Length: 175
Image (cartoon, rainbow, N blue to C red; front, side, top):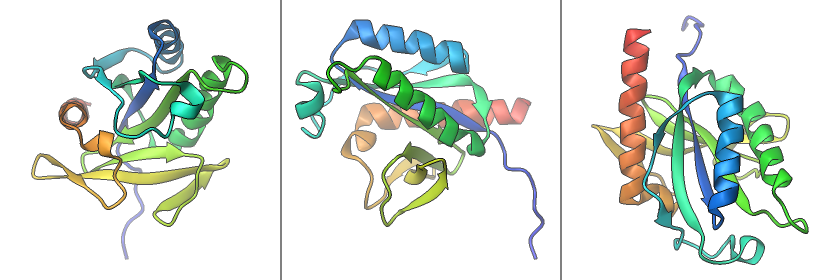
């Protein structure tokens, strides 16, 4: 029988999609106020992986990722997703989002995203929020899963996720 122990802390990150730099900056300020200092920001890339968000958010969407210096517990992610949903809603116009903020966390082994949508490969967490293993790390590489989003497999995302993982491992080592 295994021994129950507390999980190690995880690195909070958010994937952000928007076409408005002004809304991005206001959202980032709110996220920093809530979760602390942003310690890593990816390069901004065009979100041309899908047109899923276009009917709601329009065209010319940009995508980037951020992570936070302060570590979280995995149990925190459902509440964080509820907060980011309320942040998105605060910038909505006519019930259409102007920004998409998808929180998740990084462990040394994997990348977990929080979502409100149930599916075969997702598990229920709490308060209407599900968790998804979006990618795994193997031999210092980001490994695709059958349901991995194409933008999470871009070179920009992989660079960000590998750097965030490296930072997390250093934080855990020195804690």
